[in-house]
Image (cartoon, rainbow, N blue to C red):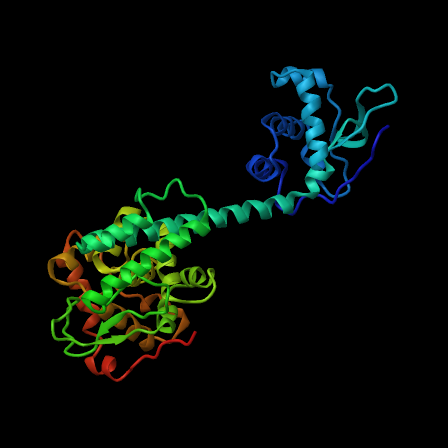
Amino acid sequence: MSVSLKHRGLPNGIGKFDLLTVFEQVAKSEYRLSRTAVMLIRQYILGTMTDDYQQGRICAVWKQVSRIARSISVTPKSINNAERELEYAGFIVRTTGVNGARNGERCHGVVRWAAGINLAPLIERFEEMSAKLEARRLSHLAIDQCRSEIRYISRSIRDSGDAQLREQADAVLPSGRTCRISSLQRLETIKADLIAIMEAIDDRSGATKTSDASEQNRSPNIQDQKLEKTCRAGPDSKATKISLRTVFDIASPDYRSLIQTPGSMNTSNLVEASGMACHWLGISQNIWRSACHELGRERAALCVIIIDRNARLDEHHRFRAREPGRCLSGMIRMSKNGGFNPHSLFRACQGQKNEIPSAETEAMTYLPFKKTDGASVFSECVRSIVDNLSVSDLANNPQQLIPE
C-alpha cells in the first residue's frame, strides 16, 4: 500500500539539517530512542531533498532495508527493530508495495507517491521537539546558576574563619562539590540551608554593605556626603541608596532585556544579568568571580553595567572601553589598593544622562573609561567625569526603592 501523506512544512528559515540537529539532541534524553534509531533518522533525512520539507509536499524515502543496513554497518534485523521503535514513538509512517517491496516516484524533484518511510510525523513534531530542547537548556542554566551561588556562599563561609559554622556547612554539603547533583530541587534546598548559615555570620559580624545571603530586593549603598573627586570611598562618608529603577534607566537596551528576562527585577536578577553580559563583553569568568569576591556581587554588577555602556561608544571615541576585561581588572586592583567605590561612578553616569536628553546624543551619556595600562590612567578618566557632577546634585536627589 502506498501513502501520499503530506505535511504542513517546517517553520520559515528552518531546513532539514535544523530538524536533524534538534531531533538528535532530544531523541535519547526526552524520547528514550536507541542509538540505531537516531542513526536511521539521519539516513532518512540525508536521503531526502530540501524541497521535500515545503508545505504540502510528500517527504518520504523508499531505500531498501538491506542497503540501509550496509550503509550504517548494522544488520537488517536491527533496521527493522529501529523502524518499529520509531513508528511506535510516532516519528515515521511505514508502508509497503503490493509485493512487500519499497518503491516510489519522484517527478521533477517532487515525490508523487511512496511506499516506504514517510517523515511527515517527524516534521509535524518539530515545534514540540524545539520546546523540549529549550526547556532542557533553561533547566541546565538554572542548575549552573544555582551551583555557582552555592560555591560562592560556601567560599564565604570558609573565609569567615568560624569553625562551628564551617562544620554546619560541611554537614549540609559533605563533599563540598555539587557537580554530581543534577536535581534543581536538591540544589535549591542546599542553597537555602547555606544561606541560613550565612545569615548567622551576618548576625555575628553586623550588617554588611553587600550581601549575597538572600534573594531579597536589596539596593547597593553609595556615598552621599563629603564626596571627593575620586573613585575611592572616604572613611567618614555615609551611604545612600541607588534604586533598581535608576539601574534600569542607566543600563543599555541589551542589558535591560537581560534584567527583564528572568521575571521580576531584583538584585539577584541584576547580578545574573551582569554575569551573562560578561560573555558578550569578553570578560572572562575568572575576572568576574574575582570582582564578585573583592567588590561584592552587587557592586561588581554595577561595574559591568557601566563598562557595558561605555563599550558601546563610537569606535573613535576617546573614552570607549576597548578592553572591558582590563577595565574590570583595574577596578579590582584599585579596590585592593585603596577602596574603589563604583557608586560614585554610577551617580556620575546618571548625572550625565540627565544633562543630555537628546536621543541623537545618547552615546555621550556613557561614563568614560579609557583604554588603560594601569590604575592611574583609569583614575584620571574617572575624575574627568566626576568633575562634571556637583555634590549638591547627589545630596538633593534621594532615591526610593522600587516596590515589589
